[in-house]
Structure formats: C-alpha cells, structure tokens
Length: 618
Figure 1: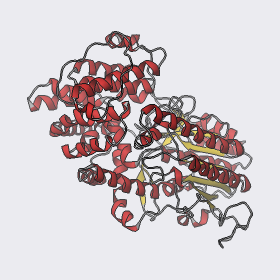
Figure 2: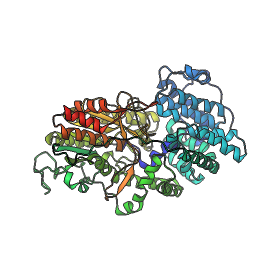
Figure 3: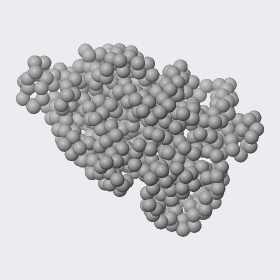
Figure 4: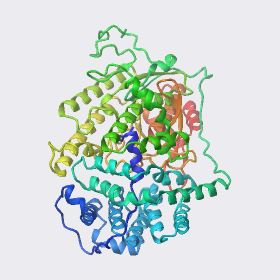
C-alpha cells in the first residue's frame, strides 16, 4: 500500500486531458527564469494559469535531469532521437508542459511532447502514456462532425496494445459530470499553490471539462475498439507457476510475519504464530516491553488490536465498493463493481462530499489490506506460522491526514519499528512481507494543507525532506537489526522509478531485502507498478489476485501489495523445504530461476516450481 489512497490512486489515471482552444504559447528558445508563486485567485485567469504551469515545469525540467536542456526542447521535439533518455521526473514535467500547451490550443506541440515521451522515456510503461492527450487532440482536429470525432479517437485507441487498452481508457469512465470536476477543483484549491497542485487544477479546470462535454464520443470510440478486440482470438494468459506443500511431509514449520496496517489473524487459526510465553492477561509476561504480544506487535497508544476496525456503518456501506475500486485500478471499467463505484463517484458533487467519500473508501481499504496480503502469503504452505505486525501510522485511514507527522509521532514510528525488530529476532521470524511504502511527494501533498504553518512551497519541501529522512533511517534500522530475516517489500503503485524518487523502503539495497513489482495476467508490467532495473528485479502476479478480506469473503484486489506476498509465499515455501537457506541465498535463487519478462519491459517473474526445486536440492 504505497502512500496513496484507494480513491486517489485512480487519480493517476487523470494525468492527461484536453480543453478549449486558446492563443498559442511562445516558443521557448532560452532558459526560463524563476517566477513568483501566485495565489489561486491570480490563477483564475486561464492564460496566467497556463503560463505558471508551463514556466514552472520548464524550470523544474532544467533542474531535474543534467543532460536535458529546457532551451533545447523544441529541437528535441523536432528530432526526438536527439533527446536524452528521459527520467520519470522529466516525463512528469514534460506532461505538465503538454497540459499547458493543450489548454492553450497548441495541439501540435502537445502531441509532439507525448510522442517524444513515448519514444524516449526510460520507464517503458511510459511507451503507452499520454493516451488522454492524444485522443482529445484527435477529437479536436476532427472538427464538429460526431462520426469523424469518434473515428479519430478510435484511431488513437488502436495504437495501444490490447492489454493496455482498459487502463488507458478508464479515465473517460471516471470523468462523468461538470459538478464532479468542480468538486475536485475545489478540493485541490484547499492546498498551497505549487507546480503539482497548479497542474492538477489546470487539468480539472481547463482540460477535463471538454472531455466530459464530449464523453459520449469517447465512450462510443471505446465501445468500437473493445468490440474489435472481442472479435479477435483471446490473448494467451501467462502461466504462473505455483507449488502446494500441503502433502509434503518433509517440509518443516517456518515462522513468518505480515507487516501491514491491520490483519485478521483469526481467519488463519492453524497458521497463526503463538508466543507461548505471553498469555492474554494485560501483562508483559515475557519481559520485552510489550503487553499481550501473543500473536505479534500492535502500534502504540490506542491501536491495541491486530486488525483495524472502522465503524460497522462504514463497513456495511462501503465494503461492497472495494472490488470495483480495484477493478478500475486494473483498467476494468465495465464490471458491475466498477460501474457501482462510478455511480458513487458521480454523487460526490462538492469538495466536502469528495473528502468524505475518500475517507470512507480509504478506511475500508485499510481494513481489508493486511488480511488480503496474509491470505496470499499463506496459500499452499500449511507449515507457515504467521505473526502480525500492525503499524497503524502507515495506513490510509491514518493520523496524518492533511498534515505531516510531528517529531514526537516520528519517534513513535521508530519505537514501533524497534519493537518489531526485537520480536523478529526473539522469535526467529524468517520471512516478513511489508506491502508498505512512503514517497516524499505524498508527504508534501499533505503538508500543503497546513496553510497556517507553511506559507511557501519551499517550506513544505524542507519539512517533507526532514520527515522522509527520518522515515528512511527508521526503515534502514530494521533491515540492519535483522540480518537473518528476509524482507519482501512491495515496490509501489505510482508507475515510477523507486530509486529516482527515493521511495522508502523500495529504493534501498540490502542483502536481506527483495523489492517486488507487479505483472498482469498476461505477464507484462502492470500499468501501475513501480520499477528500477537494479532494485525491482523480480515481479509476480498483482492484478485481480483473489484472497480473503477480514469478513471471510474472497475478493480480487490489485497492486504491488498483492505481488509482494506472492513472492514472500514462495520464499516461505523455499525455507520450509530447506531450513538452512539464508536470505541472500533465497534472493539469488528467486532471481536466477525467474522467467524473463518480454520486451519492452525488464525483470523476471518468480517461478515457484523452479525456485522450490532449487532450494530443495541444496
């Protein structure tokens, strides 16, 4: 669960759009100088808003990548092969420029930017980026004829591989009404003005309205291309390898743990770890400073249960939407669940309603997350004995909503981590899955709500940097304190390079740490997966993965959060058949036996049978 909400994770699909024509912006032929930060009121002028986003994006572009010169952008666009390979941050800024250009009516330049990104982005998921821009550009160029517009849009959609079609077009399902856009815009404007917030507001204010106005044309084009796909032979699904140790009499018990935001261990009575020295009596019987830690470690303060429990009313009302949210994340907009969620989104027509909806969906997501992860981690390995580590501060229904953690709260996070590390070593926990992660940009977004504390974005960035450094130190401490334990960690769901963005802990390099990305059912990178060729070397199934949620239902969810426990499950099986296996050996075997992912992607897909066989043979 990378630090984005279930609801807001869908906003990543809203990164590109289109709007009404306006004057063509000037050509940039020299470096742009710093511009003053305006107020939201000053950005009510469309041209001023466009210019602020464009100029700030070009300034950031110049600082983002040493071998990329903003003054050479038009030369790069004329001959993309002369441009350097683009980092993720450079791509982000280029799309900001494209958004400003498209809002200003410069269709050619906006398209050139998208085409250059597709050709030159280091992250090969970006080879399919910008579809919303391109389809809106095509619609405008087609003139006023409806048939011509739909045909032009369908032509853009046909450029996509079939496996990418759903995720690239779900944005047109999500954007439904002008009231919905106005509510989103109002919510954005509750934050401090920055490039990030201004570019989001530009999309909602100047680009998305045209998409909503012509939504029927986009949906008709989607239906046309979907029908064409349906007439083709079905694509072959990837054959994920699985192993079941249920009848393996030689396999030995293995102590493992799921580190999450709350897990219902009661669903796994035969596989629950028991600290025999700690009866449930309100006392610290084993003398480790923790009370009643019979099955694991809870967070400090009021978070004394291993499972996070929202109100019964919240669970009753919003649990039915859980699958639909994940269907939309996976690019499946035509399922019954996804359509119910779209109806729910359409009902949120002011910022307060959007806020309430996000909060409730996040709460249900946190409630379900850890249990779903645990079910994946325990499948086919009855020898596993699972402890639960709950870090409530890492959840979506968290304390740090629209604010950052205080230094005292960061101290409490460290205390929770230290307690977990001690428990791991005391009880010889061999494998820990942590489908958790943190990005500095997420912290910045929360701090921008604290207008009474931070008056400039530079202040926001400085505080977010300090928080991120503290969190990095906290997480490093547990990997260093527990060298005999294999930690399997989700890469995250932001479609970015974990090293470039310094994600914690996904960017770390330790001999007992394995970072896992997600592939879809066809064996290609999931559209949301984070990556890095040196850190994210192993991938597993992370789209529509079925597992238990706390009420005992089986629900398919999507994310690197689901891919990571698939690999942790494999590591557990390897240690069950070879108790002497070290974390370094296990990682080497998983990487060596994995199946290469087809171009244009890199990495390997975990092969359970090959890895277990190799572990057994040592």
